[in-house]
Image (cartoon, rainbow, N blue to C red; front, side, top):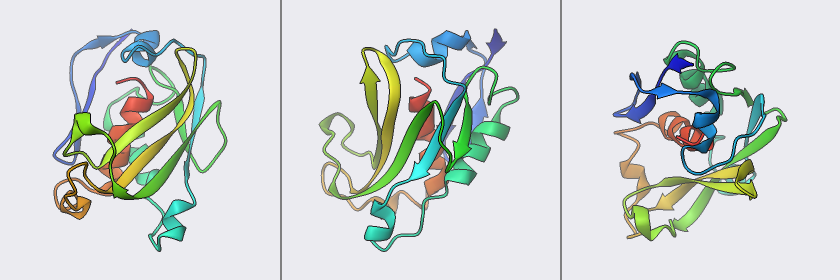
Length: 159
């Protein structure tokens, strides 16, 4: 077991000192443990369809791989940019308002695909506007898109 916690805030990946066993990482949010060793992360077609540049997935993965010692491939599965993994995650841009009333000021969320309680895939959704209609472009001066994606990847891990 490694001593490790990840928190993404103010544009930085910060290491802390909370103990996590490997299976705890995928069951923290009630997810069942799985044996994935590689998570493939892909840009969805909605970016090009909305005349947006592809999201900075590689940069978000680098934050996980270098942000805290021993993260990728040890306590967490390895993340792969634009490759197929045991679990595949798509990053999509969504027009309109985020439909999640519980997180009214949020501009992103992880929508998981489950097999029982085990995550088998999912989508990181980056929204145009918050639930209340605020333009999500206000977020970018405070947290870059790669930081937002890295934060949502933490939810993929069950953090």
